[in-house]
Length: 330
Ligand code: SAM
Ligand code: DTB
Ligand code: SF4
Image (cartoon, rainbow, N blue to C red; front, side):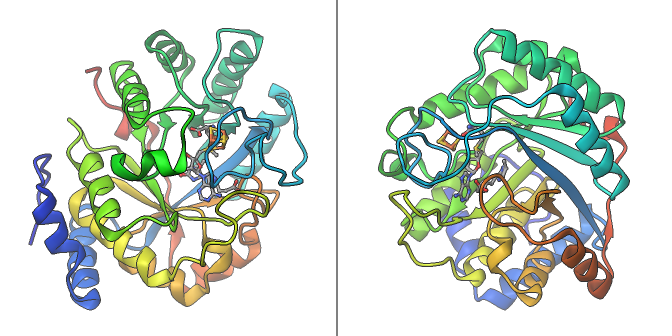
């Protein structure tokens, strides 16, 4: 049983974990989960798209890329007041983390960035863990976000290095890793995971988990997304991800990175309560919710349905001490 923290996992070791019979894998993951986390606590992270659509990138899964005709409503950057009001309501509804997403390739040193810094300060003042996902960041931008009170930065690897060019050509896998390094250097916690259902092989999934679990420090947060298929994108017609694949991915991530928060992210709208329950059993301990009942531009379960699911399963929203996860500067 791999119940200790290590950063030197081999691909072979990960293969051996990933390919186990499913029930054995889930049992191991559930055991590791109980060593490091309270199994009845699930962190509710509210996600808000603060700038929607019109993105210059070509991520072939994404409904917000300007080049695909997805019919979404493009929205410029929201006001700080609106964002903080939504964050307050999220906190009142049981969220302990608030993630602001922008459909940008990268952060630019302009007025929009100054506004984002203000939003980070405002949400941080409410006592929520603040997270942003804004695309690529330089070291100095990461530093400024940290000074504004940013707790975490989400920047997903999305898929394996080998499969990356099949999915995105406007930036590289190494660009992603560079941003993660900048985030770490600034002393911000790292949120990084990926998506399954992009036409990748099991080996690609294993390789992506290998990259994540052999970073100098494990990401404090690992989102596992199932492709949310968006009409008009090149991946719109791929098959729906089988939930057992999500369970297998979550369980493997839990065993490899025992202390991390593993987030059951995109894909919940197409899962039953039973399917989501398996993901919690396999070690997922966070979900994304949103007031709009859209994750960013795709459907997400209703808040009320999540409340019922928590009550049925005996889960409660995690209350977090904000300072507990902040890491020392690298
Ligand atoms: N533009 C920034 C970026 O790409 O880093 C931040 C926002 S972007 C929406 C954040 C992440 O959401 C992506 O890296 C991807 O992992 C995930 N994502 C986007 N569209 C998705 C989809 N249709 N299905 C599943 N995950 C998706
Ligand atoms: C993450 O890994 N998943 C969330 C969050 N980080 C930003 C976003 C998922 C987006 C799902 C598709 C959409 O609604 O656009
Ligand atoms: Fe833009 Fe992010 Fe969507 Fe890629 S995933 S198209 S960078 S918003």
